[in-house]
Image (spheres, helix red, strand yellow):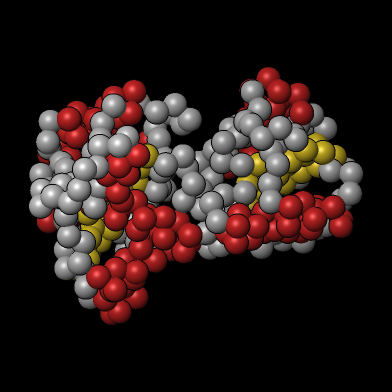
Length: 323
């Protein structure tokens, strides 16, 4: 059986794969395959181990052929895979939830502190040789302790983000489709509507999946609801934020700052954002810890092996294919 891995992943996952399928094939270049390359490489594959940067749609599924059994996506999100098209073809789709929860929440906190205390901006200043000594007005940032944190999307990562706030004695508001009793009971979080959260929060952190109804969830209107001293953090998906509207809001003082790990047209960055000092930008590295990436790779490999071995993948997304 032909198995194709679309990019190099952590060796721990490849080792798991090799024990069962030593002849797997891999794109050994650490880059995203072009559309044409992907269509060519997947031909005849019984299984694909993909990343969130691979668009797996009807065209790719068709190019692979009728023998394709499973797409094991090494990511929590799966907006890059047309699950409906895969289901129609009887192809299983699996993801890797849970293992990157803390790493992503930790990174969201790193971004929050970086923008609140102007860390990258002040470091650039120092490295440029501009630091001439302490001054009472030098790089004044904002407090974090005791402020209000707004969580949009209280799933695994949003919950972890909220729970980690207890060390800073924060007031937590959250927006979610259903009540999150854990964060309500453990830290006194309060479920509220989107408008109230945007108006009252000092920091707004995005943790919702990318769906048609969440594209540009944050837009010019919602940014105008925020405090002028507030900051936006996004470790979810880039298209949740209208980057043009965000850049305008940051330039015009509508909000104080933003910190982004994901981008609307990734890997391209909206040019105006690159010119601004009041935005922190990281290259989609929220889950980039050795521990998380190795666990993700192993989980993806185990999903793939289960699907090819006639067992239900542990993280199957389209259970109707199995039944």
